[in-house]
Amino acid sequence: MTAAGFYAENSRFRWFLSLCIALSSALCFVLPSGYSYGPALVFLLGFPWLLVKRPALNLNRFDGIMIAALLSCFALNVLVNVIHGASSRYYEEPSRYLLAAGALLAILGFKPRVKFWWLGLIVGASSAGCYALFQVWFNDSERAFGLMNPIQFGNLAILTSGLCLAGLGWAKRQTHGRRWIVALSVAAALGMLASMLSGARGGWLALPAIVLILFFNLRRHLPRRVLYLSAIGALLFLTVLYVIPQTGIQERVNRGAIETAQYLSGKSVGRSVGLRLEMWRSASSLIDEKPVAGWGEEGYIKPMAERIEDLEVRVEVSEFSHVHNDLLDVTVKRGVLGLLALMVIYLVPLVLFCREAVRTKSTQVEAKAFAMSGIILVVSVALFGLTQAFLRHNSGVTLYAFFLVALWGYMRCAQRREVSDACR
Image (cartoon, rainbow, N blue to C red; front, top):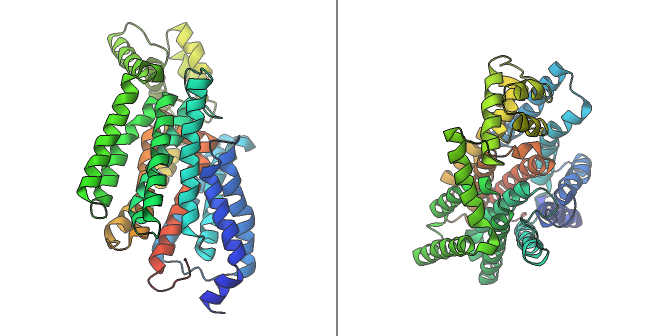
C-alpha cells in the first residue's frame, strides 16, 4: 500500500488522534485532571493501533536519541526507586516518560493534523484567562488557581501562552492567516493574564526567555514593525496589570522583595520566599551525606526539619512533599542518579530542538514553529523548576513528557512534507 493509500484508509483514526492531542491542552484548565485525558487516549489507543497497522515510521538517528532520552529517564528513576524500596505510587511519575515514548511512535506513524495542535492551545490558554478572571473578579478569590494550586495553574497558563505565540509564523502562511494570528494572539494574552492573576511569581521568570526565543525565531517571518509593536503592547499590558491594585500583582511582587530582604538580614523567614530559601538551605546540607541515590522520597523530611532552628518554620516545612526546586528536590531525594535523569530529559530535547531550529530553512515555517515551541517548552519548564517542583505534580510531568513528543512528532512530520503531502 502506498503512503497516500495508508493515510486515506486511516483518515478517521488520524482525526481521532489529532483530537486527542488537542484535548491535552484544551481540557487542561476546565476539567479536574483534564490534562491527562488526551495523553492517555493517545497511548492506550494510538500505540495498540500502531502495532496492528504497522505504518512505516522512518525513524532517523535523532528520533532514536529522543526515545533513548525518555527511556533513560524512566530507567534511572526506576533504579533509584528500587534502591530505596519505594512504594508503587512513586513509579507513577517516571512511567510518564515510558508512555510518552510509545505515544511518540504513534504520532510519527499516523501523522496527526497540524491545525488541531494550535486549536487546542487556543482553547486552553483562553479558558485559563477566562477562568482566572471569573475567580478573581467575580468570585472574589485572592489568587486565580483554576482546578489546581495557583503556582501550577500560573505556570501552565504562561506555558500555553508562549506556545501560542510560537505559532504566529505558521499562522501567517495559512489560508485564513489573519484569523489564526488574532486567535493565537488573543489566547496568548488571556493566558498571560491568567498567570498574572495567579500570583505565581516564579513562573514570571520564563517571560524574558520566551520573548527572546520568539524574537530570535520570528524576526525573519514577521515585519519588524509587528515585532516591535507586539513587544511594546506586551510591556504596556504587563505594566497596566501591575499598576491596577485589584490584580494583586503589585502586592505579590513587593511582598517577595520584602521577604527576601528580611531573610538575608536574618530578621524573619517569611511566609513564601523566605520559607523557600530556608528549605533550600537545609535540604542542600543533606546532599553530601547520601550523594549517589539520595535520601528517598520521604526519608529526607525529618533530617531536613532537624536542621531548622525555628520551630514554626520546621512544622511548615515538614508539611511539604518537595522542596520547591526541581534540581534540588531530585538531588536530595534521588542523588546523582536522579539529577542525571533530570538533566537527560532537559538537555537532550533542548539540544535536539535547537539543532532543528537552526538547520531548518526559513521557508519551512511549520517545522520552525514546532522546533521553536520545543525550545520554549524545555526552557520554560526548567525555569519553572527553579522555584517550584514543577515535575513533581501530575500536571507538570504529564504535560511536559507529552508535549515533548507531540512537538517532536509534528516537527518531524513537517520536515517530511517536502517528500510527501501525507501530513496535510
